[in-house]
Image (cartoon, rainbow, N blue to C red; front, side, top):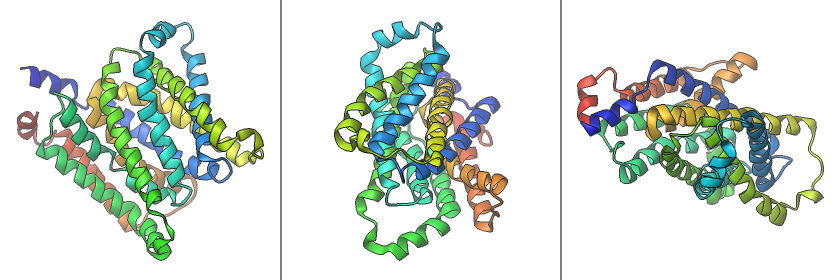
Length: 314
């Protein structure tokens, strides 16, 4: 009976799918914004600006509501850990990787997050155990991501050969693993309002990144970035981070760690759709095939077409 209840709590409703799609669209743009900004702002400082501006915006938004400062004081060790594994570590690794690889390849590697989340949640939780449906859905989603972006990203990797350092490929994978731990750990914040959890973790990650930025990048010696980078940083902080994490924790409270991590499978097709809608880019047959595979993976993970199987695997 307990397992059944947990499964129902983690069920994806139509409204939750809508929030997940919106978050995928927002985070799909984050790779684009980061690619622009990282050309003029070093990684540690870019992470600091991203989390600090987002934290400031959320404190203004939440001020006077939800007893935010009482929660920050009571849970500061938990927020510190969440900020480390959900912001400081993965953002830094992804930005460092993007100094050597394109946004497409970084998105492919980041899309392994659901696989790591499934494995980590299976080991550390009681209500999100490994099942054939979860494994199959994740593999379908990863295959779709590879088909969707692979033709444009992998040739560049082949041509560059050994010029791409191994660490640049491993860092986004390490970021995906860190996100997997964060998605599982974030379940303990289900009782808090989503803006409070987002503000708490971003405040903590700001405190983590400030000394690193000062020590490594010495930002006072950097030239002021061009306006395109400034706008990219603002979009990265306010849209992709502040608002994005409000959505992230709202979905987490409704659908659980594994379902929430599916957003990384929606990021690559979101980037392609944004290019199609706003930049006049065309959709290739491989793009459509990849998005269909991703959709199939989401359907398998949701389990609505196989309710009997769902009941067994939960």
